[in-house]
Amino acid sequence: MMEGLFPNETVLEDDYPIYGDYLYVADGKPYCSNYHGVTVGYLKRKEGFKEVRRCNLMARKADLEARRAKGNV
Image 1 (tube, rainbow, N blue to C red):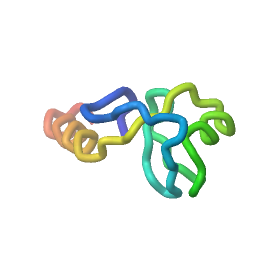
Image 2: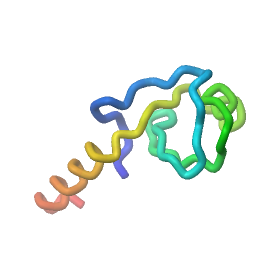
Image 3: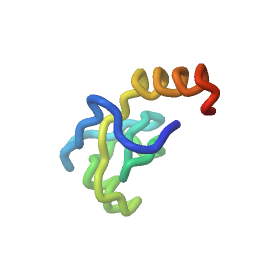
């Protein structure tokens, strides 16, 4: 998956719940959580992240398909 930000990848507040095996964007890179039932604040402390955002999988998939079609992957 590409690094960087895509539409609707909003910053999550520290009290937002984290779910195991979900994708997030942590410090600009996709991150699959091994944690479940904790908060963003906990995840940031444990992993040293400064920012955690939602991950827009549909936008990332569309971007990858467009780059493949152009031969950029």
